[in-house]
Structures are given as C-alpha cells and as structure tokens.
Length: 301
Image (tube, rainbow, N blue to C red; front, side, top):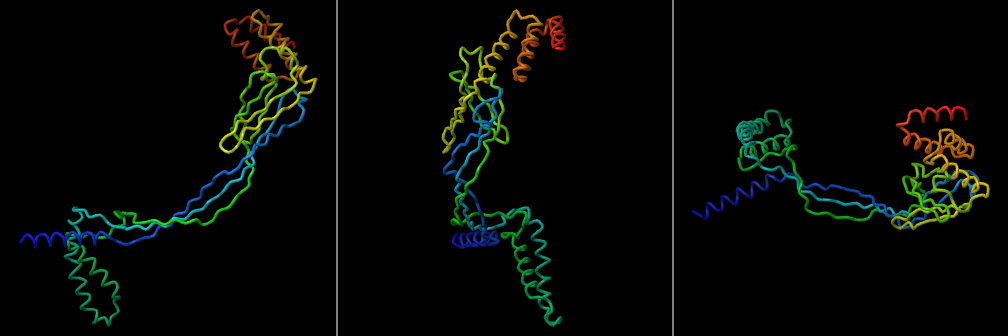
C-alpha cells in the first residue's frame, strides 16, 4: 500500500513539474564596455603671455578608449507556476473542453477533414491539462524564466581615439608663491578668471608667472602649465590690489571707497570691483546714511 501511495505521489509530482514547463528559450544579451587605456590632458590658454587683467583657458583630454562588445546567450526554462486558486476555473473548463474537442474530432470526417488537426490536438491537450488538478495551464501573465546556462563570447574589440572637453573639472590657479585657487571648468571645458581674484592682500613684488594645474584622474596624469604675465599686467595687478585694500579699510569713507572702486574699474577689474562693493554693502547694511553717501559718490564717479 505504501509503495502504491509513494508511486502515485511521485507520478503526480513529475506530472506537475512537466506541466509547469512551457518551453526553453534563448535570450541574446549584448553589452558594451569602454576602458580608457591612455589619456593626456591638454591646456589651451587664450594667449601665451597674459596681457589682459584676466586669464581665459580651456582644457581637454586626448584619450584612447578600448571598446569591447560582448554577446551572451542565456538559456531559460520558462514555466508557469502552479496555483491552487486557478483550479477553481480550470477543472470546470476542462470538463467542458474535453468532450467538446472529442466530439469535434469524431465529427471531423463529416466536414471532410476541413478542421485543422493542429487546432483539435491543441484544444484536446488544453482540456486534459485543465481537467487535471495536478497540472496547470500556460499563462503569459504568470510565466517565469529560470536560467539554465549562459555562454559568452566577444564580438569585436576596437581602439577609439577621441578628444573630450574636461567639463566640470577643477583647475588650480596660483600667482608666483601665492595660495592656489580652485576654479571649475564649464560645460565646454573653459574658464575665465580675473587675476585679482588670485591675489591675497597686496603682493610684495610684481607677479610674473601664473601657474595652472589640472589634477590627474585614473590613467590621466596631472598636467601643469606656466603662463608669464606681461610687465604692464603685473603692475596693473599690484595697483588694483592696493585699490581693493583701500576700499576695504575699516575706516574708509564712502568717498574714498567709491574712488577705490572706480580705480578698480579703470584698471580693468570690474568683476572684482562688484565683489568689493558687495562686501562693503554687507558690512554697512545697518548704516543707511553711509550707504546713501556711497551711492551718491558712485553716481558722481
């Protein structure tokens, strides 16, 4: 008795497993990987000798990229998991479908074989599957794929040489031995900075050299460049630093501050003049009379 029960349970389990299986399917997957094997940074200043009170430069990277395309064939065993609640409608459907398709097969001779055999066979199989509570019907909604194996192979490899702007990259700028200032390149890999922004206080000597450095990343090494300042540019920079210091003196009057701001503009540092003016207004925000006199002095200038 036990042997019969065990055999029955085994057969039902096997039948259920076979019914769950729908088909084997091969899925093709392609993947492309890019690996930068070499990269060199190029710094392009607007002028080799800085004759203006600002510096404009661009930067890009010349890189060699190894492109690898790989194809993977994944073999899937697609099945429809068995669910007890589906048998509530599958079994009654089978009770109707089985005699119906048997009757169709028996009466096919009357129609001279015009009914396709494939349609009759698939309908009969569907009915017997639905009739058996240990089996399930195929369903695209419940279809699941279980990976059986996968095989991969390379389609092709190629080396691509390209030039890419260093958008969003940080550049370190410094004058002589002064502190380095960090500037971020825009979306085109360019930046414009007034030289006075790189000066802290008043230089003891006329700056003669601007140091530009772009830190490395990955295979791209750090790149630096020295840009000489024209003698007149260095002298203007020192005078502008003195004007800025005069404007920011704690005891500066509105008239002296306005005069210093006008001097900054005339020397070619309008952006620095606006920054200094904003600092003055933030410092004197509670002194309405001082700010009013500053506005009048700026209008006169």
